[in-house]
Length: 163
Ligand code: FES
Ligand code: FES
Image 1 (cartoon, rainbow, N blue to C red):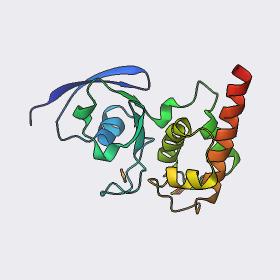
Image 2: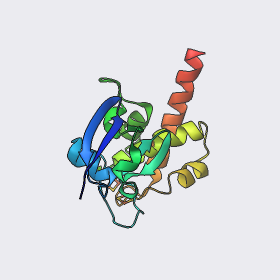
Image 3: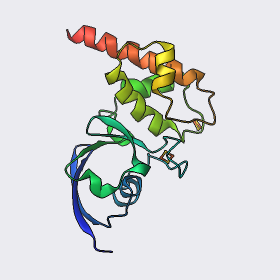
């Protein structure tokens, strides 16, 4: 099939690449960009292991074509930390033991990153609903909820200090 030239910004870096129109964003990220943090856990758009941030929204990258992202800004788990400094959501998952095998974690982190911008001071129930597009086989979710609440508190503290 004829390839189309795709220009997209991924983690702040502009990438230009010819891709087949049928290529999914998750495969573009993993195979063309070597960003293998986002995972594939299903073929029915349920698990959210492939979640990335696309133009300020959480999207399941297995359900987007790469060519649909022409001119877009994509953030993946590899772009969350600033040098050696973890983002608050990463620190939260680490501190609260919000991961075991780690397969769901990149998707969880990217969803938590966006969720806490949508709702900076969530209740436990709001966290559970807000993260409900992401499945985990290991943790039973309890520590993931704690991790997101930990990150919310840290981000609020940082905002207070900056004010
Ligand atoms: S791989 Fe399961 S929702 Fe994308
Ligand atoms: S930590 Fe294993 S699937 Fe979530």
